[in-house]
View 1 (cartoon, rainbow, N blue to C red):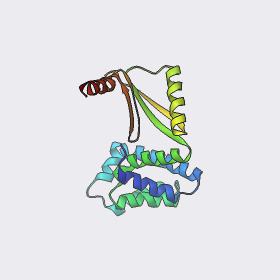
View 2: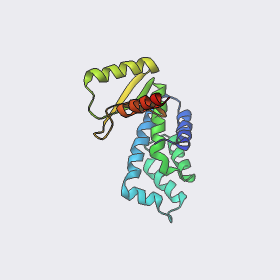
View 3: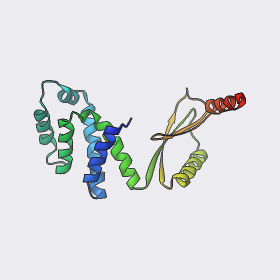
View 4: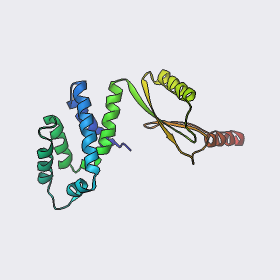
Length: 176
């Protein structure tokens, strides 16, 4: 889940990177580095209390110096200096959201009790594209424990079309 600190770091890197191609490369690098930092061995090194920030930056520099742009490497070193490397996954999410916005795309999560059929999926995408005026990237989740209906989310926005939500609205309206 994204937080404000992660968004600020993502925005800083995003604004420092000028071309769309470089932004896409940075996103790919963020994803790879995030995945690496989640492995147990690497996580031990970067969370070990006796390994200094300078040592961590040296490790990163030796691994990445010929692989990434200097601005990207500097960005990672700033995260280490500020004890924010643990936010890299969230920063990656925020960065990807910024890149999607730049490219006219919006990620939407749809949670339902049953898989969507093609007709309903297309209808949801068509409606959301006309509402947001963006290309919609639909992420579907089937949750057998979910209420019947749909729960559509994107960032802080929620469209609750579940049966339990409709029932609670009905009860509220009946009570006055």
